[in-house]
Image (tube, rainbow, N blue to C red; front, side, top):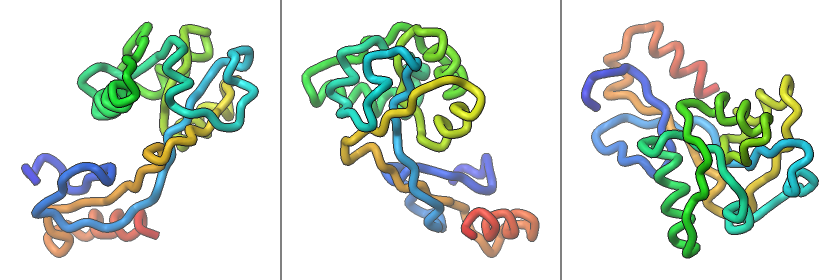
Amino acid sequence: AEGVGDIGIVAGTVDVGGLETFPFRSDRFVVVARKNHPLASRARVAFAEVLAFDLVGLERTSALQRFLADKAARLGSGLNLRVQLRSFDAVCRLVEAGVGVGVVPQSTAARVAQTTPLSVIELEDEWAVRDLTLCVRRFADLRPYAQDLVRSLRA
């Protein structure tokens, strides 16, 4: 909206007023845990149960960290954050090292789990599934290569 970028991808909760939007895909938040963690054998877990464990998270200013803190507060709890990092990959590395568990997008967990021995546990909370949206100021004003990128991402 401010002209900083040509194309954006936002979660469904972000105000995109004044922008053209296109459905992109859905993603789910999951919990990643070390293979020997008490949650590791679970297929699904409620976020309320995760709050009993030490967490590895993103920086306090990140949208996801603020979102999770709000969800914890609504459950009458806080986040027991042992460390806060700048990327989901870094979160996964410290989870593997046994620092705590993390909440990351399923797409990240699936990619990292190919090379890192982590357990991926589905969050069963309804809010864990998020719809992602592509947004542009005006599709017709994009350069041809950017229009091609939007078409490719939508496909």
